Image 1 (cartoon, rainbow, N blue to C red):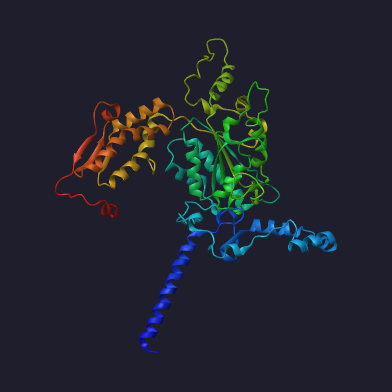
Image 2 (image 1 turned 180 degrees about the vertical axis):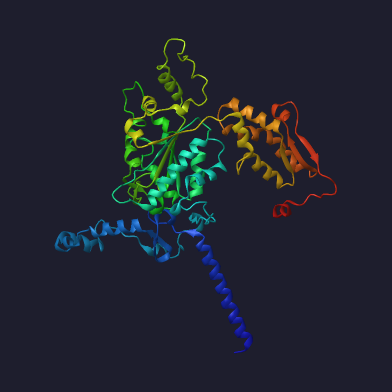
Length: 493
């Protein structure tokens, strides 16, 4: 055989090898799906690979084996009637098995019905290590970079988290067992309750589950079971039980499960939910479904211990200030030195005077409040705080828009009068910091639409008159000696 023939053979082998490698890479892009319960590998766990590209999850395989093993083969052999039936049908009575030969030419599940694997997100190095948790003042310093104001709330949360994770890392010290310090956060809407918890979980790099108390009902009724909050945490931890047992669960709208007053019907979404959450808050072994929100026969269960899970409950508690006023006004007396009844009407920090008795009167049961020993109140946002929120945090709203326009080589500026006008409009809406983005989105719409049309625009300054509807923004044209770079080059600088 000539050398040319040998080269041709080697090239053909290399080509077929490359084709097989590309086919393998394509196959690796997709997850295996269980042939019986149709769950992907990310939810069902490791698969058993059968001939002809068929996969069965561990749970379905065990159930199949259990079903087969329960058949009484000894009784079949000893019973002549059953044996005659077996001989007639040439097979097991009332039992049918999958014929794998039906799938020989099918090539398994088509790619259009497969689920692509999720790309692994790049891991960001956490600010803190829960094995060596920093002092509370350092935790608060990091929270200051993202959250404006709420000094007392940040101090309370920093100390609570420090004590909790120190307790988790050390276990029990001698014979003294340290109790868990769950937190109840009370504050008006838009004051930063959820944002504080999200920031804290990101700094600690622990799994965080945010649940809504309004969707929870007593077991057996339409709605989510109380254990579903733990199931969300397990999913956030990538089904890693040990990691989930050191996570944080934030239950929002906790004030919506207060006891219903003057009702004779069963309170399945109020007092019953509070009673059902008692064991979770204190610490118990909870059976939760893996990879699903509800329990059923096809979903495997996992046992999660909630003893080291930090529970933070938050709510706006509307009309709680009226209950506090009633209690404080009872202390008023008659005479020259007596307090006036309207003394507390205009007190912006009235919510900070809340007591456990006020929360009981609101509709929270004593057993529930006893498992939330730390009560943390957040103040309503003032005009000055809203201006700070606009420009000071690391991911402030103004910085986000400035970065967007910088991609088009345009500089965005807000003058002080514009910031004041935005804060005044936000105060009128009375929805806290959430109003800021809605207002800026409204006034930035035309600017974001018009700027890509004209390459000569170099700087845009938002003025107070533009926000108040009395004028327009100041637009400056770029100088001729500074050419505009293409967006691709500008983003690489």
